[in-house]
Length: 237
Image (cartoon, rainbow, N blue to C red; front, top):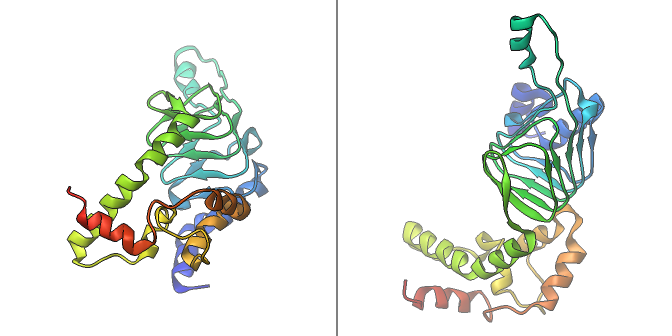
């Protein structure tokens, strides 16, 4: 264990890493699938008052400062008014292949379908159908997943170009191609062996074979990284 990992362990305990937090939640009785990632896990709050009422599927990414609740303590106000104790709880179901953006809040009764993106800062209540993108308070459908994927494909060159230009502006040199680990499809040969950085991207959540097949079927826009850089540096801004 590195000094950094030891320090995190001492400060955050079972929240010191995604793996430890997930393992701890499972021991409490929560159903959590495979390849679930909690980013900066010490900032994430997952309700364990009734852990058996939260279900998280496979390939789920939960980012910093998110909260998941399966209870509502607002009955305390009613108790003060009428004396009644009116408990409030509900299931939370997060499907497979879901991304939850930073500072999102998932409330009791929420059901998120498979292949769903939740935008940052959203409040999720009720049923969200899968294969879609949602955002807002409360979260509402922004687009289908197919539309989102097409949009991301169309923005690859524009965003990679901006990345390189800003790097060169700040550091007065060209970036190593490993810094474009999410954009290498633009310029890497389909015939040559990929370097380790790019292979690691393929390995995310056991996607190696799926990503390799898609990579081989596609065509690069440029004949190598040098050609891509020449385009970036010659194209008028």
